[in-house]
Length: 469
Image 1 (cartoon, helix red, strand yellow):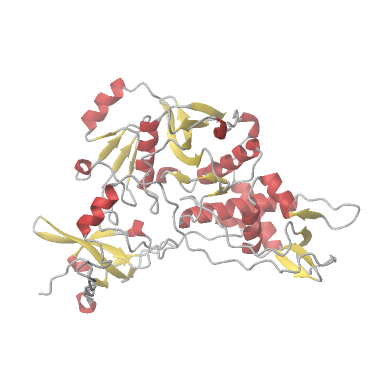
Image 2 (cartoon, helix red, strand yellow):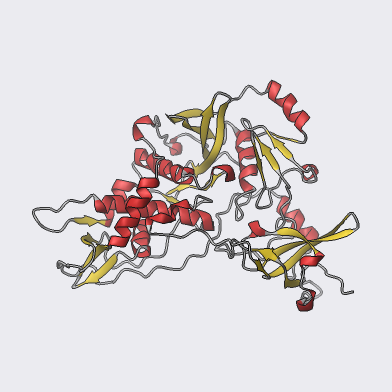
């Protein structure tokens, strides 16, 4: 019988979203033997890594087995080796070093740039269908890149006539071929956090001795990780926290937000990054949390303030990033919490008097959430415009950006993504079709969770004047 080794590729049986059998091509990342039975850890090619899993041999199509290609040896010069692929041992050793959190990768199709003759004379346009809005370009002639943002988030908001749910049958997140085999595999089987048990999607660098446990237990208030239920129960008798450390800067109903300084509350911040890494793929861990603030959203009940999600942001960002990492925990996804986190990040930007944008590129789910939020926010403004002296209403990109605190590039990419911008006789016209208007009204009717600015108690700090944070 042919032996399957790491690096082999072959079709593997899996169930798709419709619960139908399909045989996508997969790569064998690891092989192990449990109870005299071989198990294979597979990554489905062109699919998101969160779908990777251990499978039995009966799910493998051996007829189409492809063996890994041998790498050619790199010639040496003057007896010195050239640049050759790192050995797994070297890769693992290198990976253990603390590294800053890198942005998630999400390839996005570029949007077309605005026409260069933006400053041409303006003229009215009367579309057959829909509402016309005249758009005065803020910076004519500049070419724009696609700047679409995201998180890891709710895909419920596709009813605004905008993005559809993320494809579980494929990935918008590109695979990183330079990753070593250790970080490409999920290493935690299950996490118990309060009343929830979570199945991690990706690798997270928890201590190696904990990765063999069937369940990793976390204190839901301080996020300390423990190896057994007994250890957790003993810890809970000593843990006085019933909410995240830091200042509560927002409360409305049962929803609260806490601001946590990564320097003052380093252990909590690092533990938060560890659990976040379980659900964010293209991120490495923040060992140095000092330069960051963490905003944790919680839901209150008589037992305390339970973590729902969070976002982090740099204390000083040269790129106008108002979010570095953002995550809604899986039990709370598809319930509007992701959009609430995004809305809160922009409310902070409004108080700071800045426009902001999430750190890019972003995850596939995050991209959906941001696109949906930007679309709803911009459409809300456009539909609220009133005619001026009988003329069609006008608004500039700068004005939209100032009202929403959404960066201009994100405003433009959203208008182009929605296909609202038309260039006609030397002027920009925004045409809101009936489908867009109806979809937006349906989406806003479903969007019950909103941030109330009156409940926000936040004073921004000038970190440039505070030494090393």
